[in-house]
Image (tube, rainbow, N blue to C red; front, side, top):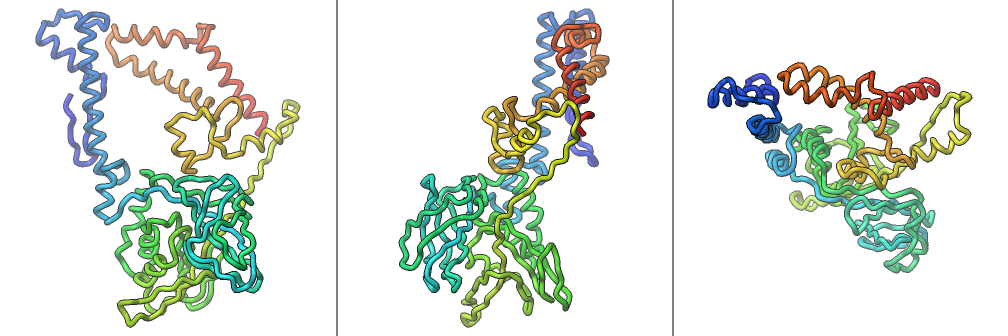
Length: 418
């Protein structure tokens, strides 16, 4: 019943069946070998409860032990491991939307200028912008509310901060969704990539320092160590230069990171300049170029095989099924991942599509029970037999018939349409 430590595999707990057997042996030592151990007897009930409590205790100990592993740590334990790397979990990040501002050339749109969407949500610009000779400029606006605030295209069109010469504002694309508090997986991924944060002059150190900025949602860093211009991921990068694309973050804090992490003589590639004034070096001015990515639409090409059983509405059904929405009947355990855009669930009137996966799991579970049953005493096997019998081939009543017929139908439909 004890938890053992193996230097190679760590803590190992006994199976529940072994715990049950050990408790039964203890009862025999106390009350004699002729004690009735049937599950329906009072002592049998007590033995079962004690075994369950010991198994639960073992589970909690194993869970605590896993909190020292960066890959599995959660909550305050993960926060504590992050502090070793001088990292803290990011709080909720706001949605960012790129808007086209039009007006007279030379008009200055000040920092913290406010605009508003059709549903009353306000956004502000983090830095000053100037409308160029084309009489328009793309400006990044930040939502005042933190978290995943959805912004549809062409909905941010009301100017709150009146500026002479600034006529219109509009967002051609949807906003880049913000995040709720950093999840376990996101924090671990950032911790893993930040181990080079305290280094200097490497792509890893640049990424680690930029990703650690509180208001940065995402970042990509590429480099060209050669003399000639190269193309990497569709971007032209000059010789001995780095390409940095950042979503979120203020120009000042990004420029500060580049000043402290880029080696002397290293160039930067991008169309958005950011400036750092080195107060520790005669107030020298350093200008770096970065990229502010625009949202791009995603297209999905679906090929289907036409058969005599193909529904007439199949095209519309596929289009509706591909819409990334959050079903109203989704369990709370999955809702967090939907709201943070870690998963997308295709919903229909029948609910989110996990039913077939559940049926597959059910059949595997039945097979497991049948195998696992052989490890129990004869009295316990009788209890499991009551469950197994209801799923036997000879039984022509639910739930087996429903599961079996639906599963076979699902396989048949899949084979005919793919």
